[in-house]
Length: 256
Image (cartoon, rainbow, N blue to C red):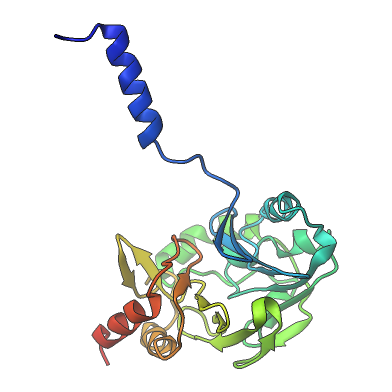
C-alpha cells in the first residue's frame, strides 16, 4: 500500500538529514593538535600546544578568521609564537599584515622570498602566462595587502619545536622560496602549493602559477623520500592515511 504524501515527505526529510553534507566549520582537526582553518582563497593551519604556530595566513581579510579559530579553541591570540609562510603568493601571505597588527608573533618565510614581503612594493604577480598577468595586474595591485614584517629568514633544514619538531623543507618550483613543513613525530607533511590533490589524484602544482615545473617535479621527488602518514595541502582536503606511499608512487610516474 502506498504511504500518504505526508509520510513520504517525512521519510525523504529524514533521509536528507542523513545524507546532506556537514555544515562548513571554520576549522577542522586533521591530527591531534593540528587544525586546518578556512581562510579567504586558501587554508591556514594551526599547530597547537603550549604555544601556537600559524602556518600561512590566507588572502587579505583572513586574519580575523584565524583569530576566531584560535579563540574557539579556547586559546588567546597572545599564545601565537610563530607565523610561518609557505610561499609569497597573495592567498598565503595576504593576511599577514592584518595579523601583525593584532599579535606580536615572529613571522618567517624562506629567504628567497623575504624581500618581496618586507617591501613597500606590491607582491609579485603570480601568473606565469603573460596575458593573464597583464589582465590581472590592476586587481592584484588593488588588493595588495601592503608591507609585512619578516623576522626569520628560513632555510632548508631549519627546525621549530611545534608538535614535537617541525622541519623546514625547501621545495622550489612553484615559487623559488616554496617550503614544506615536516612533522616527523606526528607523521605529517604540509606541502602548501607544491602539489595538488584533485579528483583523488596527486598532481603537479598549477601550471598558471608555477615558475619552474621541472624544478617542482624535482621537489616532489625529494618529498617522496620523507616518512609521513598524513599529507596536507593549501587548497584541498588532506590525505590522512598512507600518504607517503601515494607520493612515492606519484613521484615515480613523473618524467625525469
